[in-house]
Amino acid sequence: MSYLHGHHGVRRCHHCGGEIAETVHTRTSYRVGYYSLHTGDVEPVELIREDDPSTAMTVLRLIRPYDVFTCARCYSDPAVRRARERLFRPELDAAAEQTGAGSGGTG
Image (cartoon, rainbow, N blue to C red; front, side, top):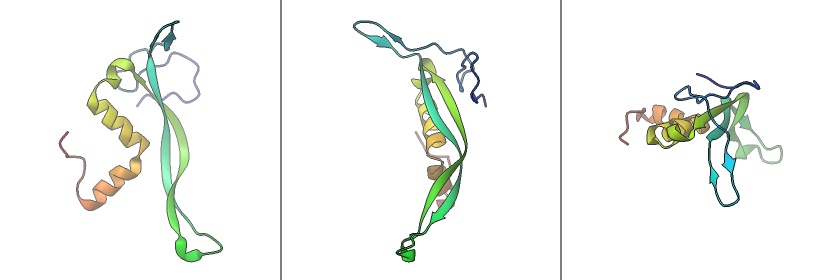
């Protein structure tokens, strides 16, 4: 996986490895060069309200953030957009695995 951890060098697409261009703005239009996803490794944490301990809830705490860059060409691929969604919403994959749905869906 090619994440850019605060590196100020050439940005590369996480999916194809190609160099990504900046977004270009003109007076009348723009051309998107890349999409950036701020994500990372998470861990579940249970929060309990002091005034009402019966209303505990589980949230995901970000423990190791990273950015995923996707070039405009790769972003047009529905499989890439699904992969980005799984990176952004890891709890959906975990829930699917617990119910036995796994990642073998159609789509």
